[in-house]
Structure formats: structure tokens, C-alpha cells
Image (cartoon, rainbow, N blue to C red; front, top):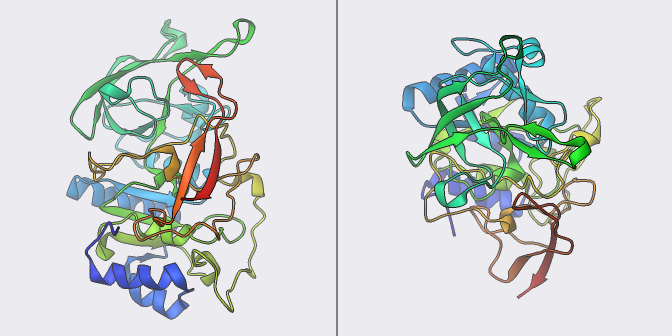
Length: 343
């Protein structure tokens, strides 16, 4: 099943699915949508599109580190900028499954992403994108306000109340806000979504596993809405099942550690089902929409799991979610295991 009827995008997806496109093919496809400026300037460009169109411009990265960099670049360019120093000094702790010791400052108009399934019926679901509307309790310990409570509007129009939740045992109980900034997410977490505007950012220190570029590119509705940040590298565009003469090595490895890969903090309870302004109500995301990860949170090669256009797995295969060890903590599972089997 294709998520787009755009023939230009479909042509690229047909190449990416079964082969490795050349740099010339990729440069011709992206054209002026190849963002070569600094990440700060590129994020500002996306924020401008979002403001002008009223539709989300989402960055899809390979690693959590890339997501953090984009989110920080976004909030630092708001009308009331938020810096890393502000977060450290004045921020409230966020979901530890998203990132240890990370914080958030909440202000009206911010785009956030929910990280826990607290009330799915009302829309408070892991991965849902919201816009902060009103801050009811502004966190400020120096002024005696030790909590943070606010209202947010879902892309469906529904309103929800966001407040701190608690986790841990009695002796180590701690509170956190079940959300994070929503200007960027990872390709793995974005599977199942359909977006009007997105920017691919292959920020990993090594080439991603086969199929990553295909999954990321197939999230977009149109070729005109698909952007690419940074240098074009064939090794980032490995086909779903591999191919002959596939280029899998880079000559410019960064110093980043492999532990920055998406899933660094994942324990199974943060399998975000990204909901976007363009995500259709009849196209919900499930846990089986995600690329399998190993016990360290690193993506498992999907060579043996064919994927149809739009990120859906081939009908000849079924990706089953099993609960080998499920610990219930405030209603969400702590551990899952993926198992691919032929139907």
C-alpha cells in the first residue's frame, strides 16, 4: 500500500526499495530541497514553513542525539528562546525513557510529543503531537511552585491536561512530565505516520541498516514536502533487502558513539507511535510498525523482512508483538519482544 500518489516520489521509492540510488539521482530529486546550511539555519527554515502553512515540519533522524540537537535548535529560535542553560536551570524532568537527566520548559505555542499511554481514549497516547495552550502551574521552585501543569491541544482538536506522573519504588520515587519536545523524532518512531513536510537527517556515526532511508522517505505525502539535510551519501540509502555492489562504508566516520543510536534509553515503554497533523484517524500506529531492536536498543537489520511502499511490511510476512516479560507500571508495559514470522 502506497501512502502517496505523487509519481515523482513513487519513482524514487521504487529505486530505493530495491537498489541503491546514485548521488546524482538523489541530488536531482531533492534539488533546492537539499538543505546545505547549518543545522540552526535549516531548522529555522522548517519552522518558517510550519508557521506559513500551519502544518507540521518534522525532522526524522537516525539517533536520539540528532533528535536532541534539532529540538534544541528549534526551541532556541522561538519568539521567547529557550537555551540549554535555561533547561538545566529552570526545566522540569521529562520521561527517563526519552533521555536521562533531560528537562523541558513549557510555554504556550510549543510543539510537544507525548511519551506515555495515560488515556488513549481521550488521546493521551504515546507519540501524539500536541501544541501547548495554557500553562496552569509554571514550574518555579524559587517561588514555591514545585509542579508543572498545562493544557495542550491534540492535532484532532481535543484538549488534554498534562501533569507530572510518578515512577520508581517507594524509596526512589521520582516525578516527570510524560512528554518531550516534538520538532524531531527518529525514523524508527515515525513509522506509520504520514507527514506533509519532513526532513531526513542521517546523523548516525555509521550507515543505518537497510531500509532506513526507504522508511523515512515513504513517510511523506509528496516529493515537494520531502527535504534532506546535509551531505548526500549513498551509504545512507541502503535498499531494504540489500543489493549487489552495495556501498555500505563511509570515508568520514564521526567520533560519535554507537550508543547514540535510537533506542539508547528505550526499555520497551517508549515505542512512540508518532501522531502528526497529517496522520489519518483511520491509520493508527501500532507497536508492530517499528523496526525491531536488539537488547541494547540498536536496530536489527531488516534484510529478511520485506517492506512495501509506505513502510508497511510485505503481506507475506507478519511482525508479531509478544510479551515475554511484561511488568505493569502505571498501566504501560516495561518489556516487549518482536518476532518476525512467515504467515
